[in-house]
Length: 175
Image (cartoon, rainbow, N blue to C red; front, top):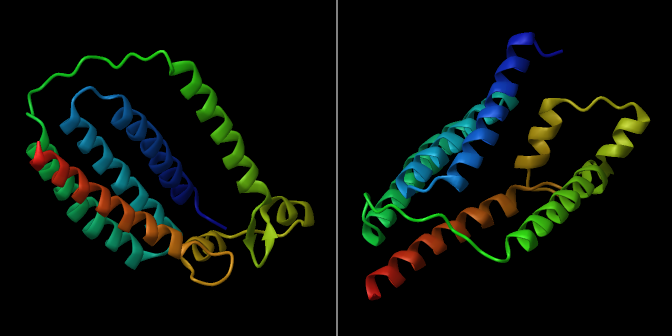
């Protein structure tokens, strides 16, 4: 059983991830958004350390919080003036965006409870059967490369993110 300290650290890290994610998206200054994203990436590393994956947590800090954030800052400085204050975005499609984000949240919750998670069984099946799901099982499902494990999509997203940054810098230099 997890100690109370580990549970408190997990909830503090999860709360920090949620708060800094919101601040990164809603901040008007782009360098502050990048800084908030750095805090999110460090929070994710803390969650990896809590799962017992020290190597993955260290890689998260070294590669993503270190290397990718340096790329972000260079991309920002190459494409924008740091002191440039942007006006608040207004759009007539705000209600559509809110509706789509709500639908996405419902789909994510559905996927959380009904997609295969552990050994082909969904989370709701494991809960109904009374099986105990440990942090090790969840960490193995997220970082494994077998069937119903998510290492390949995780790495594919990181490559896609890097390609987007390089494409953004290329487009900015052509202007």
